[in-house]
Length: 100
Length: 100
Length: 100
Image 1 (cartoon, helix red, strand yellow):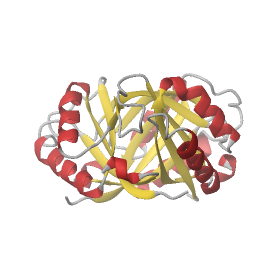
Image 2 (cartoon, rainbow over the protein chains, first blue to last red; image 1 turned 60 degrees about the vertical axis):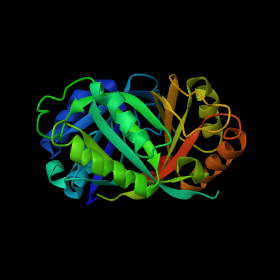
Image 3 (cartoon, chains in turn red, blue, yellow; image 1 turned 90 degrees about the horizontal axis):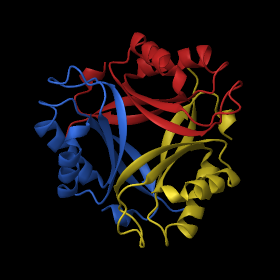
Image 4 (cartoon, rainbow over the protein chains, first blue to last red; image 1 turned 180 degrees about the vertical axis):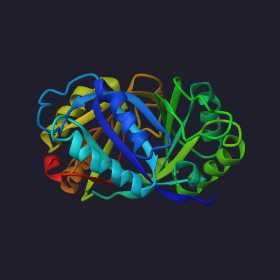
């Protein structure tokens, strides 16, 4: 099966940030996203000492440039204020064009 | 710790497809799977312009050949009709024999 | 965007094991974790022939040594008794220091 490399971006944040994060992802190049509920306690940034309950895990398949752009945005706008965790994973997809 | 490479297949689809997808996975070589609920909006195929609500995220650890066989099946049978997203990730497991 | 390599550990287990697993993760070096519900059927160890319903998926970003230590612990203490599935994925994070 022919597959293409793509970046999977995972963002874990307080649920209250979901709409804002999703809007930012779309604006910065995401063609789709998937959200699931989660709870946990963070290796979190300042201001999120208590991170129990009410988290979301947002995932999006992205071209490398879009993943980079979004990580940069998260690091500037969210990390200093919120307990947001973000990481990228190398994945392979079929028909990569639809994620670009 | 001795680990072995394995493929993690992730499939995101409308919840109504869960039973059928799981049956296909098992038939094509998956020894186990894990399902969680999700919502989102897709970089989806034709026929799934509105993908809000009621999705599932199905994951399965697979030998490379099984992952390939399942991706091929998804691309043929699901992608043209449903808003199914699928990707594989390289992971490492302990005692890989149980996933083969 | 400057990113650093990190290990993502994923553990899927019966929900009843969540508190014990999380305590073990923290004790063995995890700085945070995220938990979501799941259901499924396992490529599971002995003692978990029926693994339907009531699972959790625990994820933690870890330095390689901590991931290795925790996998070793899981393999010794959980795999022989419970239907626990665990795998690691190479991911990249921004500001890796907070996960060490």
